[in-house]
Length: 76
Image (cartoon, rainbow, N blue to C red):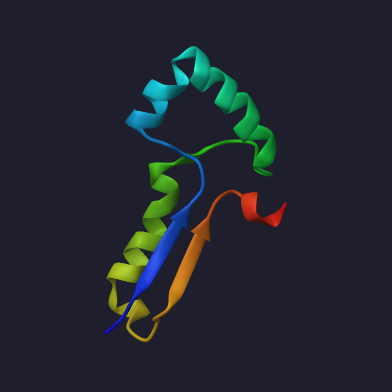
């Protein structure tokens, strides 16, 4: 059995876009972006490489792995 995970940072999804369109969301965005060294939120496509890797035979021997894709957020 294999158990792996992907831990994305702030990711631009439809739900997040709807939130960011509100006054509260605009405040949240101005707080989020300075915390991300790459200076932007992730796009869903930024996660696709990790998804393909974990779904492929290339990761057959990987287990207990967490792939952090957060633009450097955890580095601060």
